[in-house]
Length: 114
Image 1 (tube, rainbow, N blue to C red):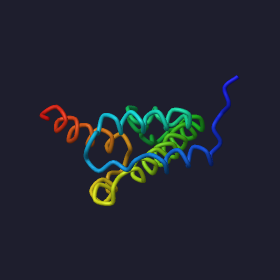
Image 2: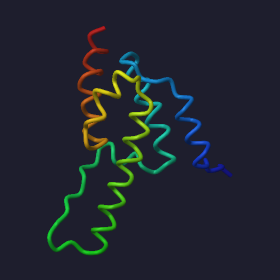
Image 3: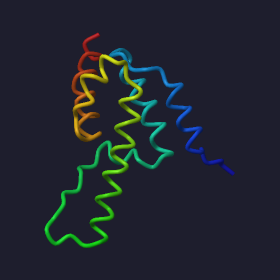
Image 4: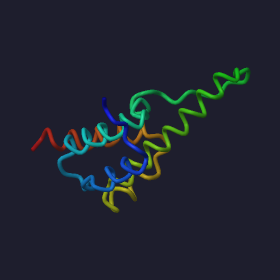
């Protein structure tokens, strides 16, 4: 039987993660993803944010609120796993999907040219 991580253990795992300083992006990206999967929030990395609609049902509202909550958890963990310099650059992005894509665009391109 696989034991589930507690919130405290997951926080400890993120604290142990080497802060991303611009190098070894692919390794850091994979580690972040592995840490987000057990929290069941990794889906927000590549899922568009649900838009609020005028005649939204209660189910749609709950789904949107859950997404916003999960997005903030994911975004916070990612930003906390960055160096202060990168945190200052990327903390202004409003969604984790946008953050993930900007990081991929910049740092994947740099690693490909090395």
